[in-house]
Length: 197
Image (cartoon, rainbow, N blue to C red; front, side, top):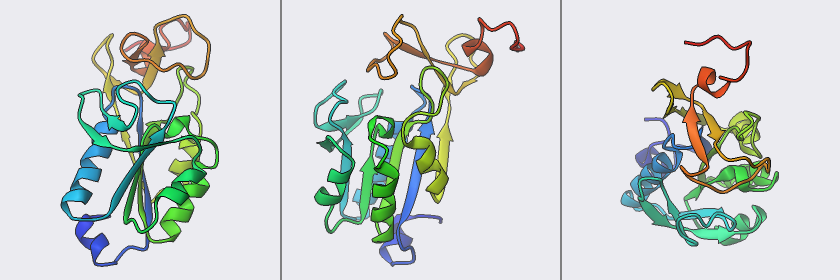
């Protein structure tokens, strides 16, 4: 019953941070939407935010790869969330890796006010390095859910987002035309030192 909507409404929790992370195509946004819709069914006051730069599917909605969606508010800076989330009980934040480094502080502030904060984002960039504020959020969260995709090369659980186009920019908005999920051996297939499955 950890972090259930029913217990939250009874005031048994004083706020919390939940992080949903993983590679691209692992179902992070789908899980975020599931939790937010359950909170709405429980008649909790919910606000959803995403970075204004993420316009892949819709400028104002959070949309999963399966095209499930929920209306959201695009913001330029994480501190704006504090101004736009008065009198709410649940705050959802998608694509956390694209936010500034103040996002963990913002989430802590919200949680300390008794708000349930649910954050989804990539934990690693295409180079396999920790991505943006997500690792710091994982460190301070009460609950971390790491979801896996399916490796397109061998079918094993995938934790890496492999970039399929020649572009070295850290942030490159894209979908299946630019990225594919891969397991560790398939991601490092070009490395001689990696043991193959």
